[in-house]
Length: 47
Image (cartoon, rainbow, N blue to C red):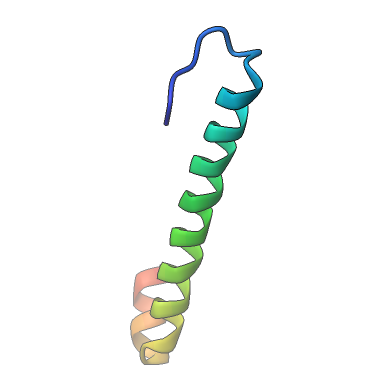
């Protein structure tokens, strides 16, 4: 995560938001890959 000072800087806020958004997209991709595996593997991974 980017550290910006002062935190009120709008450009820094948007850069941080982009970083958060990209991280969320990666997590969703990983979830999708896990779900596409066999259901038994999915159950093992989610326990």
